[in-house]
Structures are given as C-alpha cells and as structure tokens.
Length: 351
Image (cartoon, rainbow, N blue to C red):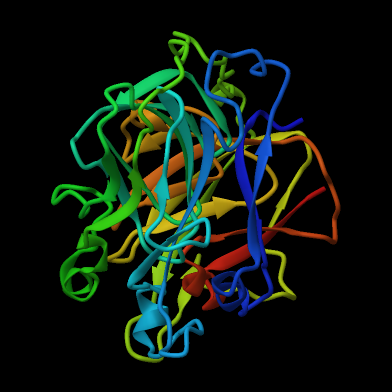
C-alpha cells in the first residue's frame, strides 16, 4: 500500500523515546514499488543510492553518550556537538558514478539541518517523506527538521572533491526561533561538514534524470468530512511543559476519534517561539497551506512530518481509510523527541 520512499523506525517508549533513540534504537526502511521501479534514477544500493542518517551527539570523556544534563536540553531539545552519519564521524564517500542519490534522513533530536554543497552546486530533489515528487526539483539548499526525509541527486561528473555541509538557517527563515527563545536557541546557526565527497578518477556514466517521476493524486478538499485544530503550546518557567490543545500526553486518554473512511484537514497552530516538526502516525498527508499560502514545490508530495514555525498555521489533508481499532491508538506529536517525552503528543483511533 505504501508508495516507494525512504522511511525509518525507532523506539517510542513513553517518556523514554529520546534516550532510547539517542542510544541507537532506530533504523532505515527503503520501500520500492512497481510504478517507480523502472525509473532512470540512481538505485544501486551502496553504489549510487546511499542512505545518509544524520545525527548529532554529545559524548562523555570515556566515549559513552551524554544525554540531558540540564533543563535546557529538554526546553530546546537535545543538541550534540559531533555530527554522525550512519553511525560514523568524519564521514566520507567515494562516488564511482557521475550521479549519486543521497537518501537524507534527519535522525537528530532537535537540530534542523540546512543542507548544501560547499561549492554551492545545485542538486535535484526527488522526494518528500512519503514518496516521490511529480518531477525533480532543482535546489541549492534544503532545510530538514527532525524526522523529515528527502532524496536528492547530485552530479559529480566534474570529479572535483566537495563537502555536503549544513549551514546556519537563513536569517529570514520562517522556522527560526523568535524573541527570548532566539537568544537561547542559537544552535541551529552552526556550520557543520556532514559528508566529504571524493569522486574516483574514472566515473561510470549516469543516465539523465527523467522529466517526470510519479503522479501524486491530490486529495479532494471539497469532500472533507472535518477540520480539526491542534494548538502547540509551551508553558514558561523552569517547571514548564509542552502540550497540544492545552493538555499533555496521557496514556489513558484518547484525544481524537476518527471515523474510518474520513478525509480530514488538520490545522496546526504553533503558539510557541520555536519551530516544532509535527508528525502523524498511521499514514501520509499533503500540505495545503502555510499561513494561507500554498506550500513551496519541495513540499508538494506525501509527507508525515511538517515543520511548523513560530506563530505559523499549517494545514494538511489526510485520508483515514485503513487499520481500524477502537482501542489501539496512533500518535501525533512534535518530533523534537524531548518535547515528545515532555508532553507534546496525543493519541487518536480510527474506528
């Protein structure tokens, strides 16, 4: 049932998700489908089709993970000072082909990456979280929040070594923290080398990318059964906590009940001074508006995680057609895992 794409899985133990994921309970799932199996895109795993799980970590002197040392690690989310790619540091890749597909996964807890190449070369975006775009989208930089994924294709036919970098978030980015939180939350303004790319001398030819990748049927907004509103909140003070619609996660509470076969619009309103990546279990959705405006081209495919900047209202549409159970719920939550553990999560059932 799932379209081809790059996905992942991780521990979700209540109030322990962050710690368990930090220590390694996470992995990648790559799904193929019949519609896209013959596309002329890089697809040889480990050769020209490379997953890049990007995570930042802090370590103690003995090499053990250092996790949550102060209340700020919860308020801001857990930021590390070392970048790991697929579990390695000082990571590099040696292309053997002209074009390489990188399956980018932001597996960090709180850090947003602004991916770009050190020589500002362009690349082609192929997909969002839940599958292919309709056509390749040319970019020079791409912001991915925790939990978001994106497949890109870069051309290394010039043979020149280059670094995949993360640069500070743009000053006009709608996802930058605001006010007092901005002064505290400057960690998304750091520069990192993510991956050194060192092309070998004789590169195998790569086919041109197809002009069209897939068809993304648009959900019928005229047939929407309900609009649900979700407000992301954060109480101030050292003892403050995170919430959705004014309440924190409670295992004994089903927050929403959704009739099977429904098509719904969810409106996410971020009332806090920092960005929250909002994630929904169960299926994929389509972003239809940011503050009343259409989303940019790079978000116009299926997604399951969406950045919601300070003060923003984001609307998406989603169908609930399968996997019903009146007792076993799905979750929606902020994908800054410390916020998830501290209450910014709720439960829904499809029945």
